[in-house]
Amino acid sequence: MEEEQKQNEQHSKNEQTASSKHMSIRSILGGDILANDFFKRQTRLLILIMILTVLYIDNRYNSQQELIEIDKLKKELIDIKYDALTRSSELMEKSRQSRIEEYISTEESRLQTATNRPYLIKKN
Image (cartoon, rainbow, N blue to C red):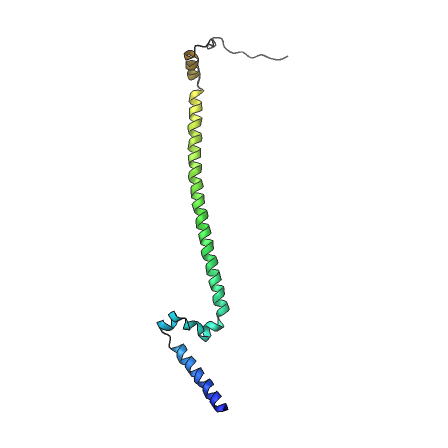
């Protein structure tokens, strides 16, 4: 009885070594490779590597999203700057003395351009 158990154990060890040495595509795709002793011993390391890989991919995705957002905000800032420049030039054009005089003359107002120079009033 003991001899049979020893033979069975030895036979199973021989099968494991033979199967571990003989790796085929079928055993890899079938998942038999995960039953290998090497993978059983390194399970924690493999899980750690998978977690770090997922974190790396997530970090890269987030950084790409932030870069896209930064580019979008830069374009928006440029548009706002151009709008501000346009409005500033329009205001400058409308506030010129010649434009104001022209506007007053077309509105038939009693206002006129001053003929006397302005003078300073001093407080004693």
